[in-house]
Image (cartoon, rainbow, N blue to C red; front, side, top):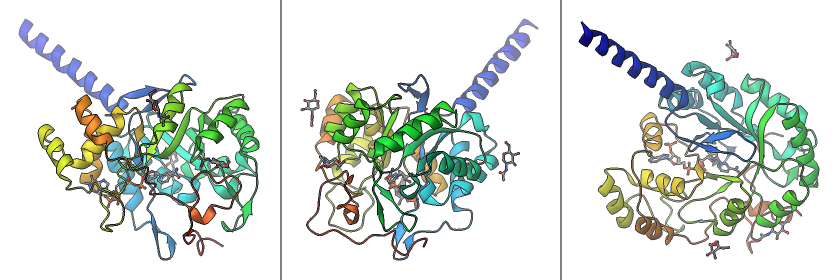
Length: 343
Ligand SMILES: NC(=O)c1ccc[n+]([C@@H]2O[C@H](COP(=O)([O-])OP(=O)(O)OC[C@H]3O[C@@H](n4cnc5c(N)ncnc54)[C@H](OP(=O)(O)O)[C@@H]3O)[C@@H](O)[C@H]2O)c1
Ligand SMILES: *[C@@H]1O[C@H](CO)[C@@H](O)[C@H](O)[C@H]1NC(C)=O
Ligand SMILES: *[C@@H]1O[C@H](CO)[C@@H](O)[C@H](O)[C@H]1NC(C)=O
Ligand SMILES: *[C@@H]1O[C@H](CO)[C@@H](O)[C@H](O)[C@H]1NC(C)=O
């Protein structure tokens, strides 16, 4: 009898623990400088560009990805007004059965939206079918007119004041920026009332972002790593190595019975950044969050750090004559993939 009672007790304790775990998801949470916290890994939802501009979502592509991710234990979804998919993200969340309040939703103020931050955020909230986002980011320090081709020159400090207002009104629980450089971050810190909680920038094996990471560590700003895989899956030979079959990566992955993309994500997590890998394939989505049960050694971290080439994958040189362009200049600026998108 006592044994049966004990067994029942044990089973119910296990069930409660599992239910709690399902609420929290699979990734641990990291503290933000505003008292909130962010999951240590999330799902990216940007579908990329083709000849016609930004790729349109295929039937159910985004809804499925988001719903699979939440069921696999993701609790952070990264979207943006410019991705044209906030409404699909909302459906995916709804379909997953995971409660809104258990999901950390990130969206971004688009480059043509900077003259009306509150109005733009309200539109995002409508598309996302929610009354608040967990994190609202200024997508780029540069602004555009509605055609996405004509520059608009708006000081990002003015945009930030409206972000602070969105935060004060509770529409954005945390606020931050994306694609800002160190100089811009310093100027923002010198002139803000609410500090940015997060900086989202490209970080991967080829782009270590050491100076930015030093800066954000010093100022208690959490970095989110976009394009975390860098050129890992690129069939074009031009970008620097490694590729997915790289010998060094394969050796480390073999030791932990993991895949090389998992090793790359683990490396970023141990550097203290929040990677947001994008996938629309169920098994890859599940694989990408299965990175919290092993730990790379300091020697392995050092080996992986040697892939850094300060090579920027997302390098929008077509914007480089904008006064707030954040990156290095190029001798041969490329074509603007946003041209021919929405008129
Ligand atoms: N703030 C910004 O300006 C900015 C800029 C760029 C990106 N982002 C955000 O960051 C997210 C991630 O960046 P990203 O989409 O550029 O690149 P990424 O996540 O580094 O790589 C995505 C690519 O990797 C493939 N992939 C994912 N997991 C894989 C796995 N385990 N094995 C093999 N292939 C795998 C995906 O293909 P499948 O989908 O076919 O699996 C896709 O082609 C974006 O989706 C977006 O949310 C933000
Ligand atoms: C919006 O969210 C509410 C719950 O807050 C839900 O009942 C409704 O079905 C959602 N609408 C859509 C279109 O997903
Ligand atoms: C970052 O900080 C480390 C440790 O303080 C230092 O060794 C390194 O030179 C810094 N790197 C850059 C690029 O500022
Ligand atoms: C940072 O951005 C500013 C524009 O606001 C630009 O003048 C500066 O050159 C950039 N810094 C670097 C290191 O690219």
